[in-house]
Length: 231
Image 1 (cartoon, helix red, strand yellow):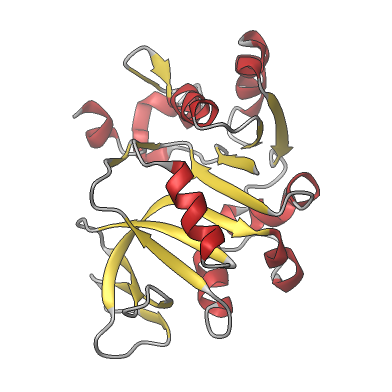
Image 2 (cartoon, rainbow, N blue to C red; image 1 turned 180 degrees about the vertical axis):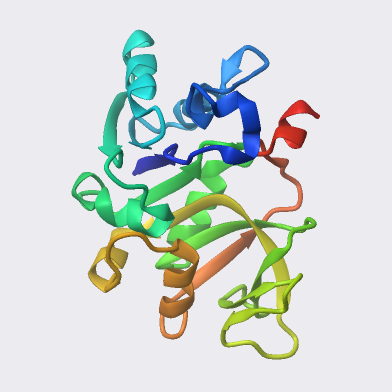
């Protein structure tokens, strides 16, 4: 299984820290966010990693080369011409990803001690098209699942905007930015250019298995916000 690290974002929520560097190279405890993610993936057995780049993308390439790719096979999906959002990024990188049966997708600004092995096993055991890691935390945007942890809808708590098939009795969770997709998803993407992976999941969830994986025992922290990083 390959891992796809999403590192192309502008990092605007980190304010001045990303004025002259990409979010992926912002440091926490003397390591860049990218290094934290790469070391976690390596420790859990991943040997092939694709990283998408846009904002100060050349710095990420130089960082990987300076560290001898951390002893792994690391490739780049270049989005410097246009930032594509998560859905578009996955489609853009399909030539690097579709030769493996399943792909782990990991946001570079997520710090977590989740067992990726257990997440992978859950995904494979349920033969899901996609599996999303979830938690219960305060978030303005929530994913809604039925009792079988099948994705049904999305809701903006502040505006009450709803996407998907909403019904009473659905349970709300926050998406952790860690998910797994089957390579079969590439056959079902009709979108092009820049598009949201959540919108894609909601469309496919109408007749495909898009599952949630709720793991309250694990720690998740979004390090993409300046206040959270400082805390």
